[in-house]
Every structure is written in structure tokens, then in C-alpha cells.
Length: 313
Length: 191
Image 1: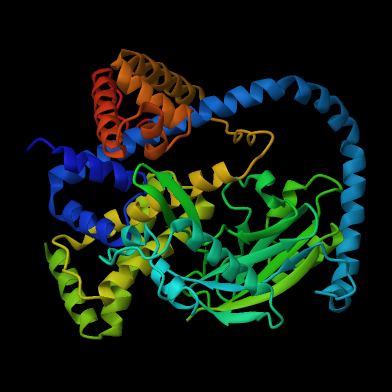
Image 2: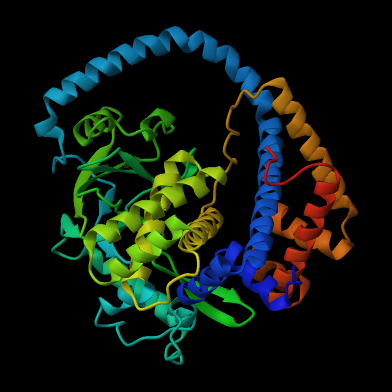
């Protein structure tokens, strides 16, 4: 086996850390598929990295759990006492859900519910260049970092910070007068405007396939991520963000939510309610069997819902 | 060999517009991605999304003029792992953007006594091997894993280039792996 060169260490490290732009990553993937020695080294690096990261996360979770252990012991006593009350509450909740299902046509996206969150639907793209090309104000702009993403050789012609601000203005324009409730795209994003701190949940129901939770992300999901503060946000994140590295300020592109292949038409249920009330019940993070049942369950828990559609191209 | 040849044929046909060949390659890409993601213990809720992203990204490459990979299955594997690396990076950067009070509760699992004992041995071996690393390697790993910094952040902390950090990290992990293997632990099989 020939020893690896420092350049390959760098490429391998950047690949594992998700730092390679698309063309560079593809070139490296082609090399990995043709150079078994290099592939073996990178495989080993990834596996060892995963092991160390897993252990570090486990240790951090264990430390956090230790600090909360005492509080949990106290909680356990009251939890046992409240089990009977919980069963009663569940029975009542089930009855409520049935009642709400019956009244679905009245409650579904009803305009009379007071909303703390306004939601728009925006297309997102595989590549940053496609995203930029869709907007006339940004179409000719090439911020630093964009070359990393697409492998172009054109010199940057706009400051990274100015570009990110301009891109955010474009994203906030999604709240204009004519908000589409349906579009065709392979990725989508949700610009969200909150008038107060709120919990936001996003579920996606493909015409064909299993219901998905898109926000908060992850399994198990981080409940805290469901809470957004007052102001403008984009879920799953702003399409462009500023990154400072030794080369200077650069932009980094983040794609939106994926429309699964074969999904057909994705029915997206965005649910929100003020965060000032009760804590978020983790059971609400599991999507129901279909959009209607999920909307009903969320409405019973005090959530306002909005339904949007994204068709697979 | 036969399979490799048939994948290469499918690639040629797909590029000539054969929809069935394209669908066949997409199915193989999906299967390879699911296999690799499962081997990496990707959460089931994320695995299908990522597999589909890998397929979409592969089909996008197939549609372009890029060279035919020497080993198509190997290329599909690395494409899936590239998608996974990007996903992990996005996840890490979002975690830093979101301020939350308490870390999430650890997942409750009920491994058997043997699995617990093995996990304990791995933990001890890893701690011992990390302690044996050179001080600069230990520092890089501590900033990366316990400090949650990316290569740029570590480079800024230590006053060196980002590339130097990648080289140091790779070498530190290689040394760590060698130490673990000497103790009879293969990171690929570790729980």
C-alpha cells in the first residue's frame, strides 16, 4: 500500500466533514471508487471518527442525564400519582379527537383561529446556482464560497455578507400578497414569520409512502428545535449563511426539505401554537396515519394548522 | 464481474435515454445507499431521506457528461457516504444555531449484559488510547469532539491552517485506530 499524501489527508478530512463542494466531492468519489487503498484509508477514518464522536455524544448525554437525575427522582413520584389522571385525560383527548374529526371541515385551516405564525412555501434546489438563478436580483451575483459549491472558476463579484443579506430579503419576500399553497419542486423551504415565540411542527404526507416529520428534524427529534422566537425564520434553515474561515467570509448553501422520490404529491401540514402555554407533548411529534387525522390531533392540542402541497417534478 | 459489466451496460444505455436502464441503476443506487447508511447506524427516520438524496444526486451525475466510474457500485457507496457527510455537517451546524437549555435525554436502550460489557471495554480502550496520543493530537481531538468545533474553528483556536487541522485529525484518528486494533478492538465492529 502506498503511503497517503498530505493532500489526500486534507481531501479525506474535508470529505468526512462534508466540506467538499459538489464537483470536488464527485472527483474524490470517482477516485475512491478507483483506488482501493485510498478508499480503505478513508473508510477507516470515517469509522474511527464515528466511534469517537458516538462516545463523546454518549458521555455528554450521560453527564446531562446525571445533572437531571435528582429532578427526575422527584418527578417520578408525582408521575406515578398522575398516571390515573393521565388515563382519564387520554380518554377525554380521544373523545375530543373524534369530535374534532367530525368538525374537521370547520377547523381545518380556519381563518378565524388567531395565528401567531405566518407560513409561506418556497422552492429549494439541489444546487446553490439554481437557487440564485431563480431570482432576477441575485442571478448575476457570485459571492465567495459559491465556487466551492459548484466548481465554477469565475471570480466573486459580491461581498459574502451583502449577498447573504440580499438572499434573506428574497426569502422574506415569500410573505408577499400572492402566496402559493402548491408548487412543483424537488426540495422546498418554509419561510416562517412569528409574532411571538411559538412551537412549529411540520409533517409531510406523500401520496405514496409513509408519513414523515420534517420539523423538528432528527430521530429522536430535539423538542427544543420546535420552538422558534418571534421574527422571521426559514425552515429547515436560511438557504445561505455566512461562514468565516481563514480564507475570509464566505457563503454556505443549505438545501431545503427533500421531496421523496416517488412521493407524487406531498401534503405538508404546518402546525403552530404560542410557546407560552404548556410544554410540547413529545407524542405530538409522531405523524398520524394521514394528514386529516394529524391535523385533528394537533387542533385538539391547541395548534393552528396550515396545509401546503409540493408536487414531485 | 458479470454484475459489474451489466451495470456498465446499464450506464451506457441510460445515457442513451433508456428509461428502464436508468430505473435499474436508481434501484441499485438506492439499495447500496440503504446498506451503507444502515452500516453507519443512521437513524431510520433519516435513512430513507438520505438514500433518496443519494439516488437523486447520482441520477443528476448520470444525466451529465461526467466520466463513467471505474467501479460503479463503489462509486454509489461513496456517493451515499458523501451525502451522509453533508447531512452530518448540516446537522452539526444547525445544532450550533439553535440555543436550547437542556441537551436531549439519552435514548433509552436495554442492551444485554454482554453488550454492556463490550461497550464498557471499548470505552476504556478508547480513553486509554486517546490518553496515549501526542499532546497536539489530543488537543485537536478534544476540540473536535468535546468542543464541537469544525476544522475552521480548531484552526482559529490553534492558529494554524484549516488544511493542517485536517492532516492532524486524520493522523490522530489513524493512530487511535492502530492503538484500538492492538487492544483487539476494530472500530468497524465496535458497538
